[in-house]
Image 1: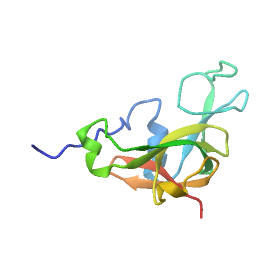
Image 2 (image 1 turned 90 degrees about the vertical axis):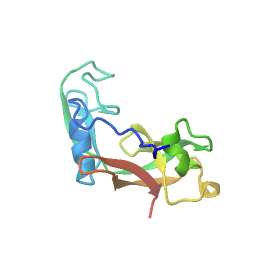
Image 3 (image 1 turned 60 degrees about the vertical axis):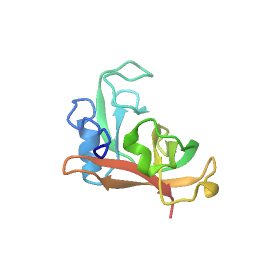
Image 4 (image 1 turned 30 degrees about the horizontal axis):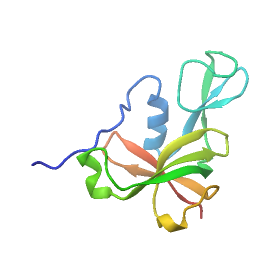
Length: 137
């Protein structure tokens, strides 16, 4: 059996391209409604508050806190088998949006709801850099 490869995001999709370009520069960018100022994650055409299609991309702080988390012991695909167990978390950024990602560089027994975290970046290929979170310094 050949080594399983993990699927990667489509970093060239129009709605998310600016986000992934920011990740490649090790910067976290999120959309903000140009009309009502609401930050939004996941990227989309319209604001979920005022229905405006006007948006800008804003550099986020990269700081947040763990809103929820779980430890994956049984991978959903052979592609992740070598990495189990691993932590999947929902992180609430200072800007108010919640993003799903991994928590790294932390023992699972040290994790807790509300734990301060900061974004880090992992270059996977020349085109794809993933965002993850670690305990805040």
